[in-house]
Image 1 (cartoon, rainbow, N blue to C red):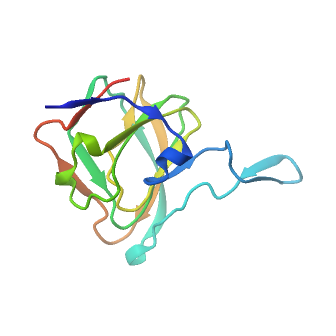
Image 2 (cartoon, rainbow, N blue to C red; image 1 turned 60 degrees about the vertical axis):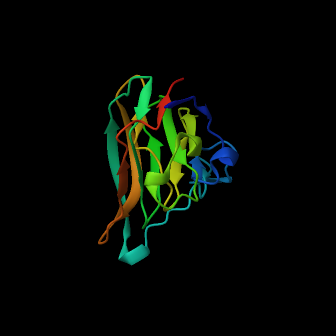
Image 3 (cartoon, rainbow, N blue to C red; image 1 turned 90 degrees about the vertical axis):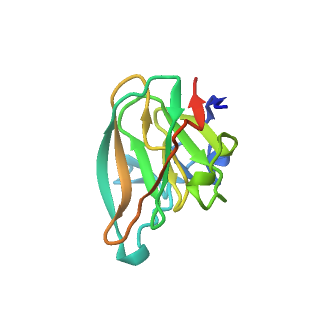
Length: 169
């Protein structure tokens, strides 16, 4: 039987087992550029150097997903972290699985955590964290992505024949 999951508020503390929340609130900050700019410093651990990888920056444009939304896929990146920074002022969903699951086929609805990210909040998935691909809500949304380029296979996907959960607000 498929379990219905509702998102909880995205906080640094709740998301810590899966990576970093990228936001200005609570960040180390200081003034630069002759006092005209505030720098919010070192917001995420970018991990891309495995197997001579290099950081790359891309823009993903996500089409909105209708709710309720069935979870049919999860993915992870064994060689690097992957950061999603919204360029649109819209909330989006973040779905992750418990970090100790080695094989994605073993993921169950009870292993999933669903967060609603608010405008101004990005996420940085740590290396090997199972997560759902981008889930934009309401409207098409752009995200700045920081991840890994280079040799090596940095994507593992698992597809479920039946949804393992349904997401609702």
